[in-house]
Image (cartoon, rainbow, N blue to C red; front, side, top):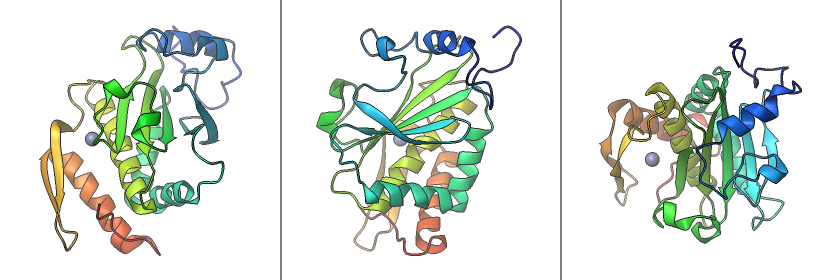
Amino acid sequence: MSNGIPAYQKGLEQKGTVETDRKAATTKVPAGRLQVAQKKQWIPGCTEFKHDPDLSITYLKHSKLPSSTPDIDKALSYVQQAPTGIGLLGELRKQDQLIVGVHFFSVFGDYPWPDDLSPSESGHCKLASSASSPVIIYWVTVFVAKRTPECIADTLFHELLHVWYMRSSGDSELNTGHDPGASIQIDAECKKFYSGFEPVFERGLKAFDEDLQKNIPGAKSCCA
Ligand SMILES: [Zn+2]
């Protein structure tokens, strides 16, 4: 995009450069992971079910999830209602060159490349585009089986916060917002103890948790 106009800017989706941009944007995805034949840049086996009007965020479900998933719908509505969620989504949407695919999976074993993840992860965030690409693609993954809508929302917010943090730090995969071994210990009263997080990242997580407790009718904290 030598003229500097991002292809994914609202209204430009039909322009002929989009496919070229998508291919350029996905050069960092390891061989075999890109469904070029389908002209899709998302994780195989996942289907879009919802997206922002300007396509900045696309939500997808893996094929092993049922077509009706009220807990996912509720989790999405929690993130979209929470003041911290509204703020974060706004930050992501205003970046014209950024597109995010949020992939909901049932269980860890359904993820096509389980070696990339740790079985203890309830979600994952990955930069899927080349650093030199004019279009920045992030893959967010959220596992949902046997989890409450609050916990699904918690993971979704956490992973989107990674996108924001990584974008702010030059799309560095070494600078995600917390140490690889960061943890949140939860006691019997659901009090949380954070370790290994960057201060701004930790503040974001705490603020979203507070929103779940206080600012979203019908929701409560995720205690698992
Ligand atoms: Zn994380």
